[in-house]
Every structure is written in structure tokens, then in C-alpha cells.
Length: 225
Image (tube, rainbow, N blue to C red; front, side, top):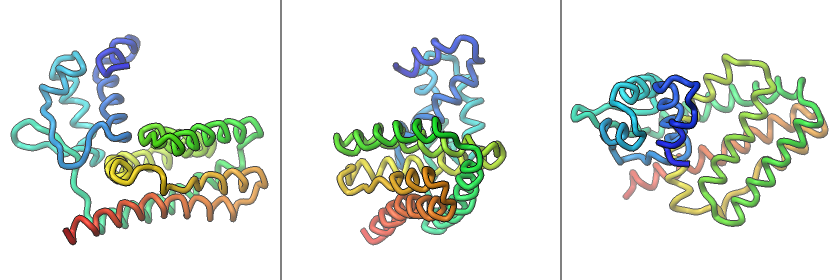
């Protein structure tokens, strides 16, 4: 489904909200790559909407640190430093481990089966080199789990973190592929099945460390180049 057809399909949702969701999804899964600016007019034309809902969506995304606006009416992904990556890493470790621990109290067997099914799709994406499929599956796994925590405030905070580092994950995976990625979700699933909170926390910490570590390493190599 194209962006334009997706907007047309959600007729019951205000256009500005549809545009916001579509742009946010593009940021999360690599539709916008760091270092490449796009015009507001170009986005409006691509979506098949007027400039007004695009401006409103971009305003919200700028407030979330997901985009930055340039003087020539272009937007791009904000640059990140090693220090910002480390801050996001620390915040994710704190918030996501807490969400997973809370979710463990409410997860049923059907939920664990659903997470297993998602992980099977992640495995398929890894095997076939489907970077976007892997990223979408990874997001779905984490936020299905976190949705069971019943902690809407924390989930919103974590979603705002993900939209800041997502484009850089896509850049890293686009360069290195999926062959060297380890599926850390297996350990999380085993911990969930055993109702082992400590093991679940460890699995989440290792999963977060892998992803953020890739970004940090990529930034370090770029600085040395």
C-alpha cells in the first residue's frame, strides 16, 4: 500500500492524524534516512494531501525530536551524537525493563503464543535478509509485550525514544545486512514461559545493548573516517 492509498483508506481518521502516522512509520522503519532532506511540498504531493496536514504532522514530529526543519522548508532526521545514543540507551534500559516486568504480571498463554508467532516472522526476515521486515517484527514484538504492562505513560515515552533511533538502525542494517544479527527474543520468550522476571530483564538488557551498540559503533567509525 502506498502512502497515498493508506491515507485514502483511513477515511474515519482526520487527515492530519493519518499523515502524522504515516510519516512516523516511515521514520521508524527507514523511509527517512539520516542525511537526506525532503521538502514539505514533496511529502504533500506523495501523500496526495494539501500542505496544511503535512505541516501539522511535521510540527508534532519535530516536537518529538524525530525530525528537524530547515530554513528552505525541508525536513530531515536530526543528527545524533555518541552522548545522545548513550542517553537513549540508558533510558531504554530503564523504561523497557520496567515495562517488561510489569507485562509479566498480566501475560497469558495466548500472549506468549502471539509473541512466539511474531518471533517466527523475525527469524524468517533474518534468514531472507529482509531488513524492513526484521525492523517491523522487532517493533511489533517489543510493543506487543509492553502493551500488556498497562502503563500507557511509560509506553508513550518509549515510543518517542524508538522514533529517534529507528532511522539509524535502518542505516546500520542496510549496510551490514541481517546475517550477523542475533535474535535475542528467544531468551525473552523462555523467560516469559518460565515466569522468570530476572531472566526477562537480562534478555531485554542484552537485546537493547545489541541494537544500541550497533548504532554507537557505526557513529564511532563515521567519526574516524
